[in-house]
Image 1 (cartoon, rainbow, N blue to C red):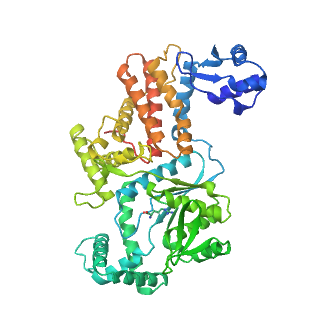
Image 2: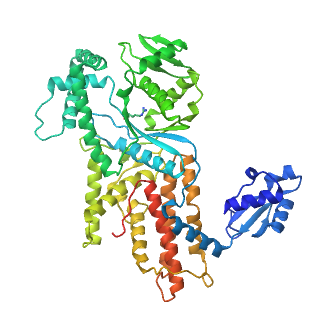
Image 3: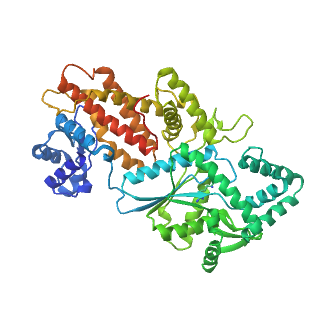
Length: 552
Ligand code: ARG
């Protein structure tokens, strides 16, 4: 609709299309769209008022003029008809667009650390990253996803020492991840009393760097076991694959060339024995420790080079918590200093923490909360609710999984990512309110209505597009625009909020009108409108990686 207005206005006035802005009038009674005429005044040497009047005469829309704005009223029936037909025809292609056509984008997300449980901290990276991946696809980008495991660094030296010294070979059915956690904590306790242990840790890390067979054997085993464990969580979240499963260790032999290049470009200096890059007003970046051990940021630079080469990205997103902001600022600054021109393509997609009662989420014993436990708990609670609501429902397990997991994901994504968010399982799972289950429930309700569809042609002659219906159509028509804004700002919450608006428009319409009545034509119209809503809810939730259920 907007594009049509832009085309017509620019051709009547003979001005550039970029100059034509289509806005929404402050007062909806003026019209559905407004074109401000101030931007043309200079070029056309006419007053905005005169220009608005000219357009008022020549445009083949229902228009009026208020203070240099041209207001346009749309033909509600025609628009409603076209839009409903389009959505039902296109189904999950509705909203697909070419915003990113011909562009390569890399999304790095999830990236948990091996030998540690998959914590709530990585939940946010995983769900925000997956949503941005889906949204980018919908916008026509050529998208590649990377899971960059934390599988390297001096802490693995400590872990190797700890496990070979105190580890129980017999796990008695317990998980190796728990055992590794136990010995790692013990290492830190013991090292307080006996600082020499740090030296032992360094030695083990050196062995790992030198590809010592025993060190590698343990390390590989830690990694395999961790991946098996992570996979359970990915399965629950319906994340089937990453285009690339990589990790910091991939770059262990690729750092020296990077360091050499920095040296050649005269960027390195020595500070207290360590090798650093001075970054001007920013905290210097530590490139190599005084004992020669390599560092996180050095691996990140090596990984970035490699990705630029392999993916030739136009944009790379790093979905990592706010606490690493400085790190990514440093990465960008280093890229500039090295003389490359693509630091603007590097985007840190930061996010806040999950809080409980205003404090960082932790277990009763002050430990970090494990994601899979929370998801399992959500699924259990969903099951309790469903049993109350609909005890005879088939496939209760499947349904509870979609609702429980969807609730946790939605709670995360409905908030602007940079903010810390409060996590409360009960609130997250409420069927009324701004929740995932509320949207899934709205979808299921529409599905059961649709059993009454007769699949006949609707005649619009006697149909009145009242305010409830027009609001609904209006919101439906904005789907593509919202998807593009969500990509532009890399903010999935715009989609979550949009879906809540759509559901609330639908529920208003549903509350005010009897959908199934004696008038077959009118009933069919209302059902088709509802069907269009269900298509968009399903697709929008899909962008957030949340499933829908036909019956619940
Ligand atoms: N594994 C890291 C962590 O848990 C996140 C990795 C972020 N990505 C990166 N390229 N540095 O903190």
